[in-house]
Image (cartoon, rainbow, N blue to C red; front, side, top):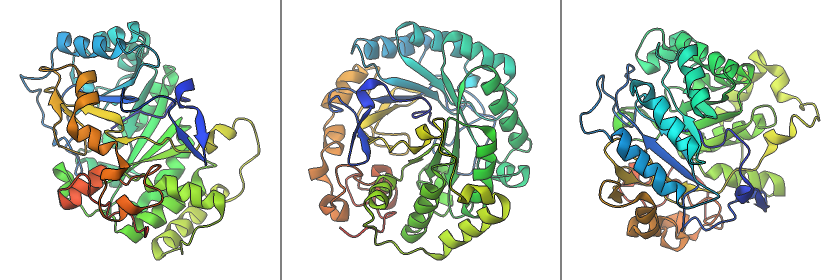
Length: 395
């Protein structure tokens, strides 16, 4: 889970070139987003869980002091400091969560939390996170009803707990991101989920394209043409719901092609089915939205960052990875500062160099603004620098 676009980007990220926002600092020198997995403990048993969560906390989790050390290291970079997302498992399983948030916030780090939809996500706990300095939370909604969501999360009651958590977060003054995983088993429900997300009034909808890692290896990832149909469907919704994609950076290409009028895409069956479903349950979403100042932020172009390129992940035991969905270790924060690992890791340096990419990604005209999902490439071929087979674009 992640909360990485729920607030307007800092000045360092507001530059836009050819419809894509790029950071105004060198992502080889510092990360934009740090996802810190506090624990793998979680009361849910989700079918797609990349962490393969367990009911109880691991005795070798990073301690409060070690997490503080990571924050001290990040804060030493000075402004613009990285954003930090505390994730899991369920970070609410950590009794020191509020203390951790407060410490990071005191150092000037932008703090966000990704709790699970369980009874732990109470109004009191969410209010406590806000008082500690968290600015945003994200909850996951993977079905439009208890029937579909709870089946995916494999715990009865999760849908209702999640909706209650979303509403309590907004009431506490926290910005709300909703994450939705798209796989072969869930994509038919996507239009109904979109309507629910729109009704919740989210600051950001992050659509996760399932990567075959962890428990997700038992699910069906979308075929390339299906992914393309979903990306165009999401582009249709963008004026109504502020959204982004996770592990589908080809959405940046879709945006650029749509703005230039040079797309060669031909709508497939899935796109037609999603549009038909949306027309039946939320027809106003297909019309032109009101031209108001409040609607304008929803048209923000995607931010050009990716696994190991502006984004870095730290596991509950300190392992540094390009992302949680790309389980290749670049170092460990117990042995070296995160900022040093991020700058000097040969793996991360290669991931930041479009010239290292293989196959269609390496020769693609969109290599610098997209570059393909490195996690999708690894999950499907074992090569993090290989071509992203989830994208049908011909170089």
